[in-house]
Length: 164
Picture: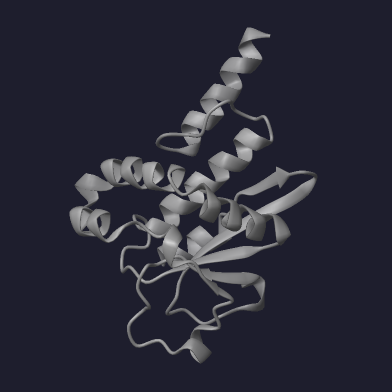
């Protein structure tokens, strides 16, 4: 199952001397102690899941893509790159909520919860990429956040090494 692979393949980043772990998981999965702080990052509550069963510590509706963007994207894989570009622009326009998420991430292990069926192309995956790119910029690993992937970040880091 792909989500299991995503959870195991964590990015451990360093932020102010702390190790950062962001997990991604469908809200329908069973809560685990390793999830740390469970944050629902969807604008709408997941269908058929009770608050007690979900064991959500925080629901940040405002960090989710706008209704207009969700409707435009419609989970169409061909629109993934455009979705991320537009979603990242929405996140840039909402620095307060991004700072709230960064504070949660800095405090310890977090799991971004989502309800979409697609485990690879959803807002939690995009949000994780965005937050990790912000952390890498803050840590001085790159000068600007990645537009499309960690591959870009890694290439920029290598280019800087070659120049020195």
